[in-house]
Length: 79
Image 1 (cartoon, rainbow, N blue to C red):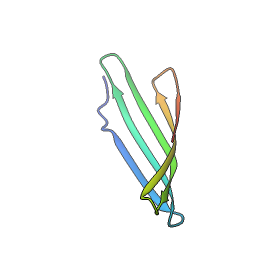
Image 2: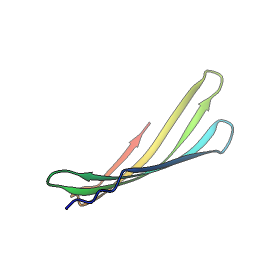
Image 3: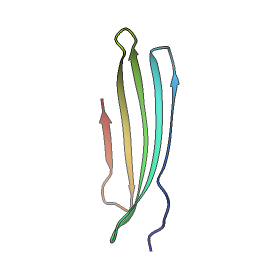
Image 4: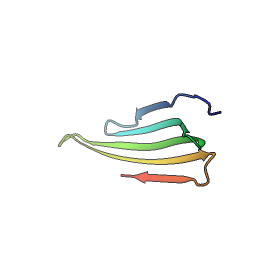
């Protein structure tokens, strides 16, 4: 049978300077379906840059999606 592990997420950030913040996140998800039992293991790192003069934030993230019980792996990069 399928195991019932709840989804989990942990994230945090650290201001390197008053405008630059380093970020990290870890997600774990049990992707149960009627015929498929697989886990998604998703660590991510990124940064936020704050433009204080115009109240704007630039955000970038790199995320790896590790799939256990699946045929493929995925890498996601977003800006």
